[in-house]
Image (cartoon, rainbow, N blue to C red; front, side, top):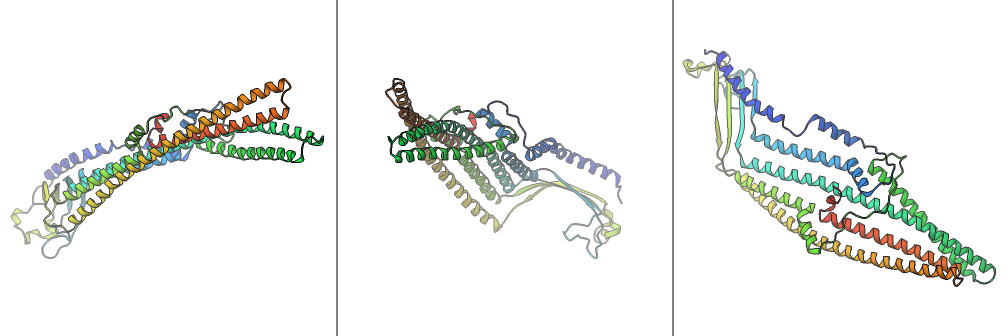
Length: 460
């Protein structure tokens, strides 16, 4: 029987040398206890912020991004995708196994797996070359990039929704101020008509007409008051503000408007649109899977090693082997090359990967066409909304000039109070129409900027 101590020391030294790189790599992983705890804390708790002054649009969006639970979940999904990539990479890193046991044998000593029974075993395996697994790893990396794009998509969605709610709330509150002025003018006209009707100078239908105008204004006020309450509560939840905090907004303009030509907007969208980029990443993933499936025709190479402690007392190796050549400690290390001669699964897998690649390529072309058409339509919509806003602006300007003329006539005794209040009512209605047109234009620009992938650049 050979000496056991020296070979064991050598073997354990080799094992430690192989394990150390694995431990060192584990220290470089992106997931850390502190960052995981921070993400978990962010996922469960909104950050409460006190707003005492007027809340600007940029500040509102910054708070929404800071407190968005959807963004936290998207980051968790990206972490999962990164860990899936690490699982694929682990196939090409060292793997060390050990174990001990006792096996009773009758006849030729062998285990159910075909190896000699050993009292102690230490095995080392590391894949060096395997195109199929390598293709799966690259595909996982491409899909992890798609998950990172989902973070950008969620960010854009939060920006779009917050900006739209903020601008609408500012418009609603401005409109409510105008409607209260309208209500005052309508009440003055109604009182004027009632007095004249009581004196027999107006028909009763004019009183009914005045009452109808006042009732319509009051109905509009009730509607917008409810909308104000809803948008305020929605923004408060989005921004993570306490219920006791008031939200003071102001009419605001977007930092940049979409003024590029349609062709330039299309090119920008094809470069930055998240749907197009995700489709391109998926196509690249399918390309890697197809190459990996074709690589399965080639041999795969593994770096293998094994150390066994055999027992002649338990398994009687001397009955089947030369007793003079038996040794307790056995060690082997080298390359294992597996050459596929014929596997029915490989051509089937190649055919499947090829068809999936063709589908992904078709989806890229389809998505690019959809985005190009959507950008054209949205750009045209922005032009129409801008034109409608200009019409509303000029209509408002005309009503303001008309009101000035009527005011001068009233001061000179050439116009009645009814004429003056009617023009004031008309001017207020034109203001409301202009605010509606302005909000519609801004919302159209937000949608276009999101499609072209420029929305996040407005609020870095």
